Structures are given as C-alpha cells and as structure tokens.
Image (cartoon, rainbow over all chains, first blue to last red; front, side):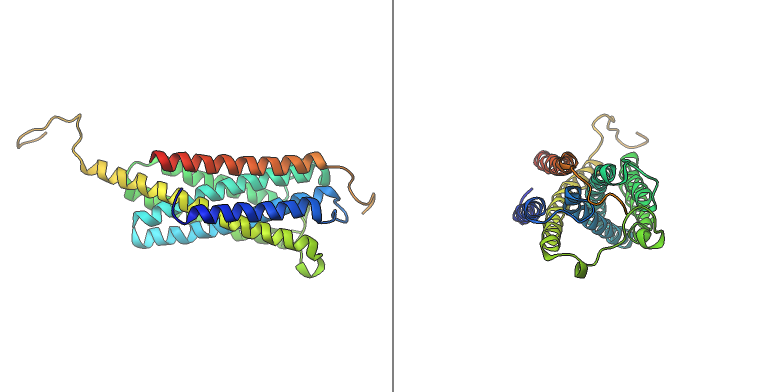
Length: 232
Length: 38
C-alpha cells in the first residue's frame, strides 16, 4: 500500500471511527429497536459502499471487454474482491441485527436472499478467475460473469420496495434526527474512502501479478530442452 | 406493534462492530503483505 491510497485509507478509518463513536455513544437509542438499532451505523454504510463497489466492478468489466487491457482486468478483480468482503460483512451484520429484532438470524426475505445470491455470484467470479490460466480468456470470462452478476445488484437495491416483507423500506433523512443521520453519513463517507484505498491497493497487486505473468509467458520454459531447427 | 422498545442487545452491537473492524483490519493487513511480496 503506497502513494495516495494510504492517506485516503487513514482518513477513511478516522471518519468511520468518528461515525461509529457518535452512533454508539452520542446518538439516542432507536425508538423501536433500542440499542440494537446502533448496528445500523455499521450495517447501512457497509451496504451502500458494497453496492457502489459492485457498480465500479460493472464499469471496470465493460472497460475490460471494450479495451482488452490488463489494467481494467485488474480493476475487475480488485473491485469484485473488495465487494465480496463488504458483502460478506453486510450479511453477517444483518444476521446479528436480525436475531434480537426478528427473533432469527436468517429469514428467506427477498432482500436477504438477493444479497446472499449477490455474494455467491461475485464470489463465483473470483473462483472462475483462479480456474483459467490464459489471460485473454480469463479477462473475457471474468468480465462477462461480472456483468451477469451485476444484474442482481439493482434487484437487491429495489427488493425492499418491490416486495414488502420483513426487511424495512428506505428511510428518509427528513424523518430522522440529525444526531442519527450525521454519524450514518460520516461513516458512509469514511467507508467510501476506505473501500477506495482497498480497491487501489488490490488493483496495484493485480497489475503486478498480471505483468509478471505476461513476462513469464514471454520467457522460454526452462524445463523444455532447446533444439536447433525442426520440432522441439 | 406490541412490547415497545427492544431491551438489551449490547452484546449483539459489540459483536457486529467487533466483527466489522476485525475483518476490515485483517483484509488491510493482507493487502499490505500481498503488496509487499508482489
């Protein structure tokens, strides 16, 4: 981790910590959920930034297919990996919140189910990348599978509007106290900076790996005997 | 809605925040080492 992503990441950590401290200590307990409602200050920013990271993966996938460049390919890998980390956290936080609120850790509610499908689909993209050795084929397969996986992301977002079941609908900042909205927004901005730092750091690792792989492909195989002319 | 505000739950809040910070820290450390090794 180097260059500009380190200060961005540190600023992100500071903002997330400020948002969480205010959500835990300063904000009042939620009217129905009590102290359990404080989980929302960590859960909601994770959800927002997780979905944004998948949107970045979708854009990178189009860029990769369009240009065929390894920079875009590395960005697909970076955004999908960070998205899967945030998505897994989102599901864990949601389950922890659900137990005291709904009485169960998991329910086959549309928002939960589509979110689970989302982590499986994008996790599948990472798995596919590891199964393909040829870089051009890997680029195409992972970009196409990322675009297919992304089809579910707007469904996840809209699921609480389309199917009114257990998971609550969108909240409006107009109906929520500033002491609750401000920590939520600050934590979200912090999470955005932190995710940006993680994506860029992961992208640099991917670029280096893909460059090393391309260099190794250009070099003669040391296990293969050199021959002069004819077949070898 | 009956029963009013949910009581307690501090353990669940601690678990959610603890898990989040632990996973994010672990991932950042893994990025640091992977970046250093590559």
